[in-house]
Length: 205
Image (cartoon, rainbow, N blue to C red; front, side, top):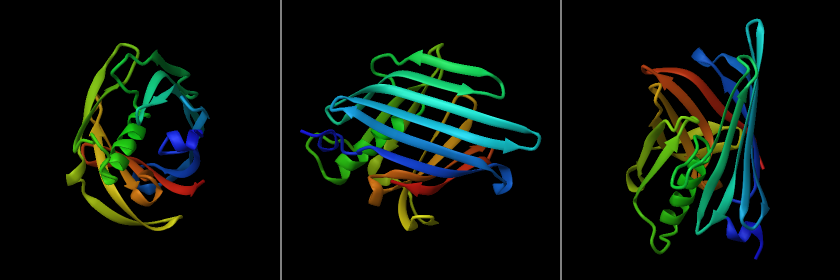
């Protein structure tokens, strides 16, 4: 059986335009899901930003395994060049890193959409944020998600909306497109009700 047949999401590469406050263009972001074997995945991302007099580059990598319609993260890595800081940890069993939990939410939505046996309306992910084990809960009721239709580089796209809040009180909101297996065509961060960043899809393949 091929990797694509075993993983409902399949490999992809996407590019986003990155914006700061008041939708000021700051740079680009890229996200890639690789499925090198029928049981392993690598999720990587990088951002290149130019803010006033300084440049910023971030890089992230999540590695793990796939099985039983779940992506199971094993290791998480995130590096930021401007501050020269790195967050890296092994992901404990039963927990999810800050990036790949969205992939598992997409798999849950696909299962719910297809009414797969054993699928659940309520899903919850304990998301670990750092090497100290700081964890937040991400809860979703799949049959009560708000919807919106967006004008994007991919055309007019119907989406469902999910969001969660981290330990710094930053709420990240995702617009997931059912047409593309619930791929996030837009995401944004908010603090105290104010938008602090947004990613808008440029290309998806």
